[in-house]
Length: 55
Image 1 (spheres, one colour):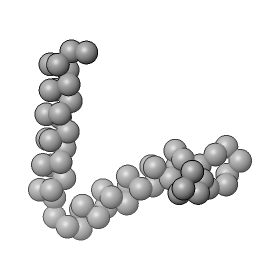
Image 2 (image 1 turned 135 degrees about the horizontal axis):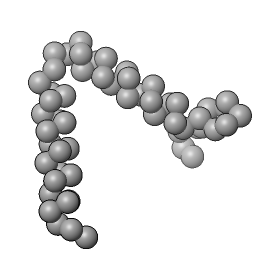
Image 3 (image 1 turned 120 degrees about the vertical axis):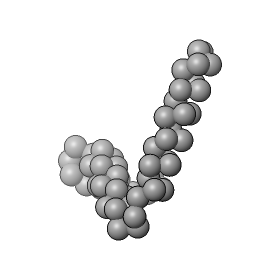
Image 4 (image 1 turned 90 degrees about the vertical axis):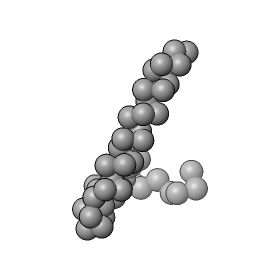
């Protein structure tokens, strides 16, 4: 693997974390709710039933 690409991914991740932490608490809560909604939308099977957390 290209170590420069790995470093770039790490740098980008750290920038995202820094940006998230610089938000006021109410905006952080909005971001977390948005991400949780995205995760839920992408983990539901096609038949509409939710996936249990232990699977």
